[in-house]
Amino acid sequence: MFGKILIANRGEIAVRVLRACRELGIRTVAVHSTEDKDSAVVHLADQAVQIGPAPSRQSYLNAAAIVEAARATGAEAVHPGYGFLSENPDFAEVCEANGLTFIGPPPDVIATLGDKTAARAAMTAAGLPLLPGSVEPLNDAEGAARLADEIGYPVIIKAAAGGGGRGMSIVEDPVEFSRSYQQTRATAQTLFGDGRVYVERYLPSARHVEIQVLCDGYGNAVHLGERDCSVQRRHQKLVEETPAPGLPAELTARMGEAAVRGALATGYLGAGTFEFIVDTENNFYFMEVNCRIQVEHPVTEAVTGVDLITEQIRIAAGERLRLKQEDIRRGGVAIECRVNVEDPDRNFVPTPGRLEKFVPPGGPFVRVDTHGFAGYKVPAAYDSLLAKVIVWAPDREGAIRRMRRALAEFTIEGPGVHTTREFLDRVLRDPLFVEAKHDTGLVARILGD
Image (cartoon, rainbow, N blue to C red):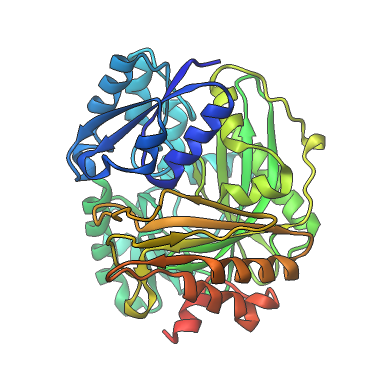
């Protein structure tokens, strides 16, 4: 087992990783920007190293500074969390070249699965179902438009190197295609440094369901069930739950088997998530792989009792997976709500500022993953996620009631600071959500878009 791990991230996930390390008896190194010098993880870590100014490119995306911090502090491994460099194959390779264990898949696996078109090709070879669309990137508008005509509208244009709900455009009409194609390519180039795009059929009434997998370096793999992530704004998740309500157990079992098959076929290592689209007739289609821990991993932990971060670390340390598929037992229902520092009434614009009051909810079966505290200044330079509220109950009705109670208790106040807390309560009250008849269009319908 490692003696010291550097956490190459910030915010709530950095605190979450630190806690797992502490329970394993592993010392921690927190890296931080000048903006985050007073953050929670800096106060909690055994050591802290400033790696650059506020802009991410000069700090949390500065691979050289992170590796130097690891070497200077004697860290043996690097946990990348999610976002930033977590799915960057070059960073994983640089870590390995410097004698550091990257806690995640090998660089070549990240490179394959991080490229959406390469991932589609790999999953096709593994026998996973895909929506009609291109496997190779489409390099000219005319050829892409012809394929869209063959597929049938609506279609979605996606960045091959995209992620996090960014770099995609839905096209309803052929007249709009050429303009959307050029815009998506330009956006992809700006966001990811890679302008390649592909096209696939878009399902306007669909569920977003993902499967959590764990794989070791000895050919063993398990899945830990599904999570429904259909409540989204601008393709970014707000509410996640498990089990996925209203889906037959036989369907989710097949999805789990498909995810394990895809993971083994590509030599996956560690914790990962296979994302699928489920249509109104309960057909499922592979969408992408997230080669990292997910924001919503706590709901899986709540129903299985498996600490996913601990398992990540053990696998990276060379241990065999201690779980077999028959060992995975799920009980009850878990829901997670992301409390972001945003104003839903102004199209979810971020509203950073100083928190004068910050009192998280408590009570039985309520968990809060956060880096917030009273007096904390939420920076404008980074993602707006402030806290995740996770609840467990024996059934879905009880979980919804418990979550509504927890959100009502959550006190977050500061000059100019708005959060999604009240909007999340609106989602939980919505009849479509309560009756488990919602899909990825729920938030737009609530807002009247």
